[in-house]
Amino acid sequence: MSLLDKLQKNSTIKESNVLSKSKFFSTKDLIQTSVPALNVALSGRLDGGLTPGLTVFAGPSKHFKTAFAMLMIKAYLDKYDDAVVLFYDSEFGAPQGYFDSFGIDTDRIMHTPITDIEQLKHDMMSQLNNIERGDHVIIVVDSVGNLASKKEVDDALDGKSVADMTRAKQMKSLFRMITPHLTLKDIPAVVVNHTYMEIGMFPKAVVSGGTGIYYSADNIYIIGRQQEKTGTDITGYNFIINVEKSRYVREKSKIPVEVSFEGGISKWSGLLDMAMESGHVVKPKVGWYQIAANGADSKNYRAKETHNKDFWLPILSDKTFTDWIESRYLISSGSIMQDEVSDEDIAEAYNDE
Image 1 (tube, helix red, strand yellow):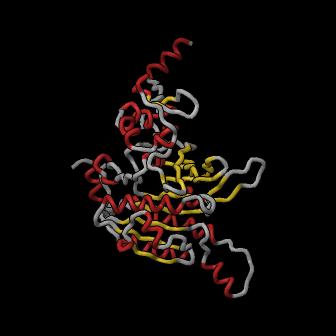
Image 2: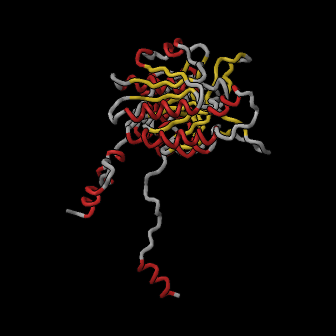
Image 3: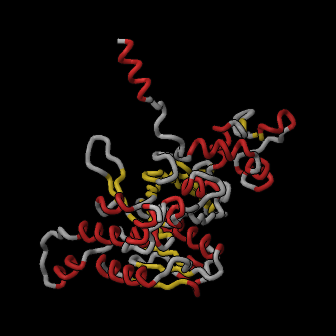
């Protein structure tokens, strides 16, 4: 029996295993969404997507945060016929019609209303404790941004107006407790949160809830918003996914997702900017675009005319484009030691002196 075998046999934790054989370090389950640019934001790859663990979408009100959660739900339910959703609802901002507009089967959703952080923590831990690895469950919380602590609620009922110093501690406790279960049981959790502006000369958006959510999350996205106009009329918005923290994508990356009032979410959002940066799409003149691979014979397109599969499939099937996407957004997995120095090199350097 090898020493590793002995250590595994004596371990009191049944999941202990040699790292190269551990199921927790095997290829992560990728839940591919219908929006390629969103897959890039989630995983750094066009054919990637949502992974198990904690993913946070944060931003001000009316910044499409719940809609991003809906896209995650739809992708997960589409991938697994037996999948269900555990939906914790504190804002009730997503009526059944909202689920219907995304094509989500509400018969596969367990809707759980919540009023405070402790209630959420107790129920979520109870559910996670009874979920087994292999159960296809996605957890969505909408949202933690306005959730009060139990003490804050009790103080209000007792007529007290003292400051609540427990909320951040309870929030940290919640995410500290659920994070290992999400990884061990291969469960994705999508949490909607709010942001506030930091005070200072150069204020920036900060995710609410204290440091606990930062430490625990695999991915944190802060959503910005830009108006889309035709003349003076607002026709929709570009929601900018700012990568605040990611295990897979380079931080501070910015990926737009276009939503129009008439057509809803554009499946091809963000790709035009990427393809122009990579050189796969060129701009022969102001307001017009061409597929670079077609050369002089390429047809000219207006920006709106590029929002179709006929334009994008040749580019998305081009390996040089997918390789460029990964080199541009994916965190490198190469050696962290760039210049290896041997003992002989050190000895030789001393001898030269």
